[in-house]
Amino acid sequence: MRFKSLLVLVLAAAVSVMACAKPKQKKGAEEAPVVEEAVVEEAEPVITEECIMNISLFHEAVKNKMYADAYGPWWEVYSTCPNANKSIYTDGTKIVEALWQAASDPAEKERLAKLAIEMQDKRIRFFGNDPKYPKDYILGEKGLAYLDFYGEAKLPEACDCLRKSVVGFGSKSKVMVLVKLVDVSYALYKQDPNGRAEQFIADYELASNALGEQAADAGNKNAEIAGKQKDYVDNIFAISGAADCSKLDEIYGAAVQANLTNLDMLQKIAKLYKRVRCTESDVYFAACEAAHKLQPTQESAAGCASMAAKKGDYEQAIEYYNQAITMAMKEDELEDVADYQYNVAFYYFNNLKKYAEARKYALGSIATLQGMNMNKGQGRCYIIIGMCYAATRLYGNDAKGQILNKTVYWAAVDKFIKAKQVDPSVEAQASEFISTYSRYFPTKEERFDLPGEFSGSTYYVGGWIGETTNIR
Figure 1: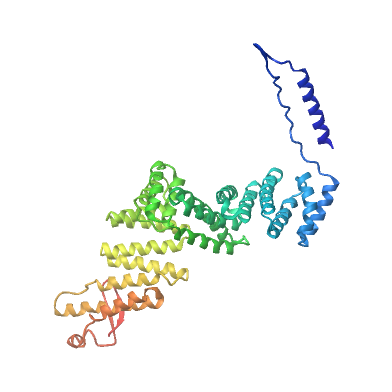
Figure 2: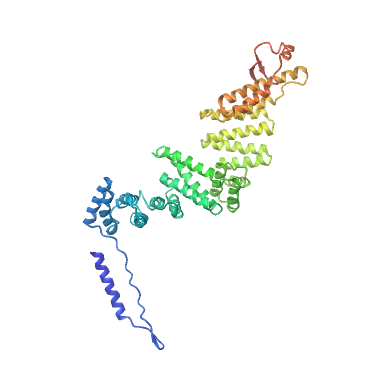
């Protein structure tokens, strides 16, 4: 073979150099001759006819699941011409896994496990530039191989390969690679919660974002499974303890201060805090405020709104939420729009006592949710409206006015009834309000004293409320 001939020539040259080298002299003694080693560059393996024949043999055997028969010709190809065809590695994975599963001798199982890992390294060497399955993809396969053949014994190695694969391959990564990255990183985090919390959070973010992109891609055949697996990894993160707000503050407090002009980092931190509902954190506020100064987004505006509200500046909070509403509408993030509208309604009702404005935003939130065919969330808005009505005094303080002021409770109870009709999640709260405010309806005696006001079965509640309700 050409490679063997080259090796003979190089070795012959090396012997000639050794024979001609002059030994250096040292006082009273001879020093052994120093000879530089000949460097032999590894030549590309030659693809022979025998290789091609063996590829056909093992491939046919694998198709028929005859893995023991496939091993012989596969090994010949793998050993002598590993650059011949990608099937050496795709079929080889199946062959080695089947033989490993069937093996009972620990030494043989260990040999096959090492072979499985070595196979991925070889594939990277010879096929790492493949346009469809490049090095980054193969690293994911190597990470899965570590898990399949070594389990918990090689978690750090598996995690390293999976992470490198996802960093390089991004949203094109296999769903299994993304899920396993979170699983393995979580297992390592549990072994060392203090030392690995930041890395686990980073791994989760990496995988969750990629799964989210796949789930949102209507052209991706794996979109549905990616969405389900995103729910799974989100749940893992939620129960991990790493999502604890104080823990996040420990990790990201200094990071925010060190990145006050790094918009990308600030936005990532703000989104993470929002995802795990740590939006009362001072670190979250700092990230949002810094990001908002650099480039306003709905996340940064909402964060600044929460910060202003925490400081008691509700007018400023509403201004920020209005910015967030505008941007969220442009981005078609309607669920966020509904949340922001509800928050504004709550501030107007609870803190600023501007009931007409509170109703305006509550109705806006209801309309947004109805546009998405979402009932959950509407109930809390109807309760806000009902509470605004119940807190209103439309008439004077004389005897007549005191009776007429009670009519707002009819209108308020109408909203509480509507709340539990459209949104069962608020049924208990709505029922409690119905029971409470029904006690303040105008009595029969009071209505009898004002026959001109209560002549029919309905009553128009005037002022800013402007609604017709049933007399009860």
